[in-house]
Image (cartoon, rainbow, N blue to C red; front, side, top):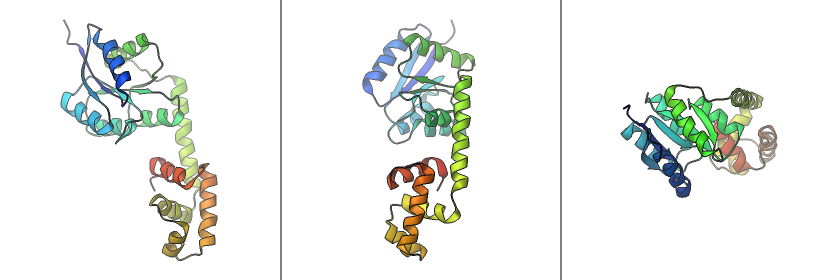
Length: 210
């Protein structure tokens, strides 16, 4: 009899982890070997147990799912990453595609679909749909467009906004007027379609490498 498929579950909602554990453990060819409630723990468990599949939430405390998947890929671990998310969102899909995940499922999928997906990723079957891959490409293109739309000075200002500096502090550091900084910040928010400085800073740290 072949060895069972070894799975680690990573999600910060205990009730969901319990439901997934019950769902998977009742299958004769699947065994859950560990659970994690944050990104760093998911990474450590994957290193320690080298599971066949890591069922990975996209949003985890400490380190998001894409960062965990990316780190596992960098380290050359053979674990297949199956992303599981509450959000059908281009940003998360693109992040998981870029990080090398094997597929992306929503948390409201039918239980049989999740079980089937765990088996499929181990068998090497592709799980990404053409629509998901197209959406990921579109999101990556949007990131490039936004990045290229920022001037060098706007990137400087955005980097300082990300550090938490006020417009007055930025003006002092760049030796320009506060009015000039106000102008740049306004342009940055418009180009990023961000509603606030905080949103712009989060966007920049996640996608623009500033």
